[in-house]
Image (cartoon, rainbow, N blue to C red; front, top):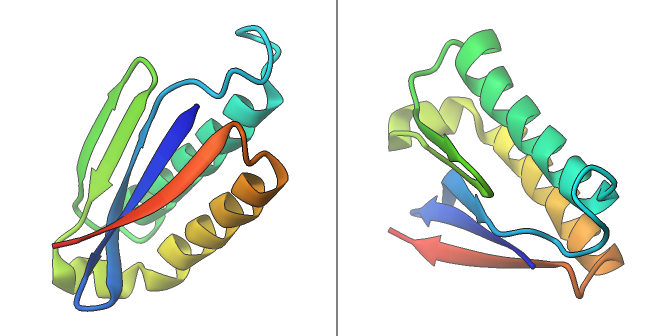
Length: 105
């Protein structure tokens, strides 16, 4: 199962952490994993390359984390909230493959 944790500070999104495998299909054919991975990379790339905001980014096998300072996160709220909405919809459609949680810092 893919575990998604959105990080909030004072009600605003400041980052996310993804871990795990969806288990929907075999590696290379897993549409759930592909959808989550693609959306996560698009979010991270939009924040860092298009908006030009510095972020703590960590990527490993079945893991991705992106964290922004509160000031920079405010500039990326639309992108982060779009990513949150996308993953909430995916978790409703594939509820046995994705869980979404929140952490307040």
